[in-house]
Image 1 (tube, helix red, strand yellow):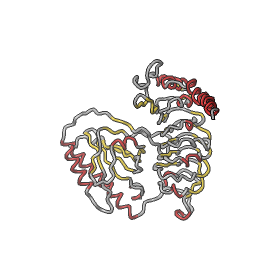
Image 2 (cartoon, rainbow, N blue to C red; image 1 turned 135 degrees about the vertical axis):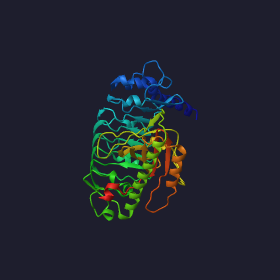
Image 3 (cartoon, rainbow, N blue to C red; image 1 turned 180 degrees about the vertical axis):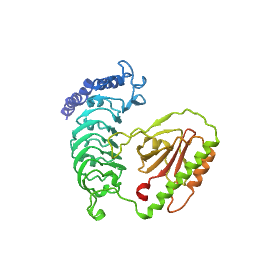
Image 4 (cartoon, rainbow, N blue to C red; image 1 turned 90 degrees about the vertical axis):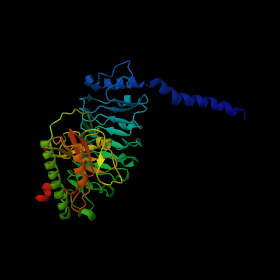
Length: 406
């Protein structure tokens, strides 16, 4: 009986040597880890604020997001970085949850970010990464929610390990060269999905047929389920006749609104007001072009809802959503945005109509919001500032006015 305790002592020491000592030897401070990452990146001038001896959180290092003194995010998109991403350096940041290297000039194979198990969001879109991604690249990333790899040159099969991620919400793989069949994604959590403009083939899995056809366009060999689409290759769907009136009325309403606002501008003196704007964190990319689209810029505080909404959303939700440009004219631009809840809306941004009074604008919006007609889609909400105004509509998937009239 007395021998048992003597056996526990060497086992405890062995555990300490095997599991604790390597970490204490190899671990870097978070500042040292970021400086190691900086060494692997070309154009270090963009990271000039990353200096030795300074604290990344209190010294405001560019792109470094902290919470309670712990680095939780690296947002380094669109600053001309190139070279390689030192994943081993990133592994030294235990609190890291989000990384964004989008819209830079990185190239080479897929960086093994799958080894950073704590990550919840990865944004690598609009770079020059290429080659196959291993099937098990994401097998250990059970916390991953958002993965954006669009606008690169990835080839081979879509990694099958993505289908086993229980919390996946956004998966954007469009504008690459992926080939083979589309994996059978069954996650009910998946709200945003796009594999358009690749080299995929075969049937669209039944669980993915809830997404719009445009999410699969540009793959010559992809087919809808034969029972639903007659085995036909995916192509853009035209609006049904029953929906034509709705879209036409929406267009007429917008024209009437614009005329009213133009009249108001002639009756009021011009005022100049400076404002600060914020940008969408994850810009979307057109399914017809590999050039990144302009981000949706929004100013101010929040949205005013003009319909009785059981589920509302905030201006911050629009700011965080991916924006796809639908069109523009003299009055402003229209954007399609998918917010985190999965709801798709269209935002009409008007800058020229900047002299309409707040009360008058609110009255017009309330009148439009109360319209109830089967062929009318009224606005859901609006955002008011004197220098810009936003109209928010639910997105109609049936097509555009050009298709309806011709």
